[in-house]
Image (cartoon, rainbow, N blue to C red):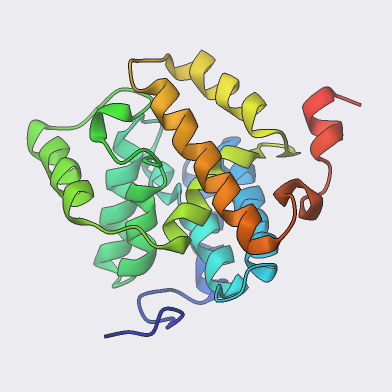
Length: 208
């Protein structure tokens, strides 16, 4: 069994940066900056949490949306990212490509449309049902909720942004509650507000 912070199944930081740079050339868009901010947030939070490796956290945050390299898609991007990284043997990062979208662990809670086959949908459903989340999965879920394309903001602002773009469903409030529970979990580990380690939250939230 691998140690919790074993870097097996994870690319080097240079490889991760190369993957993201190439993906940005293939499909330019604000998602690239979002990924970089999520990466930095994951690193900064991990630096304040015992037992988490900031290096691993940074790479996971950087590549959580790497499936967008294949074009403008909706929920398909989680599968494309998973398959892309699995083919390269980076199974630990491939995991967060799927789990980052499901802080509430139910496939029906996803924001966005399922632009994939029935078989692919069933794969994700079974994957979620059989997968156990660890603190890295939770960390990237949290950072995905904090990172805008131009920095960090209150989670509530990011939630509304996503809801306006993708719509809501009967699972939305459950998903939001799960996000706040994750926030509280990490703040207990840190012993302080997570916003205290992220720069520009007030400015980005209120446009100051």
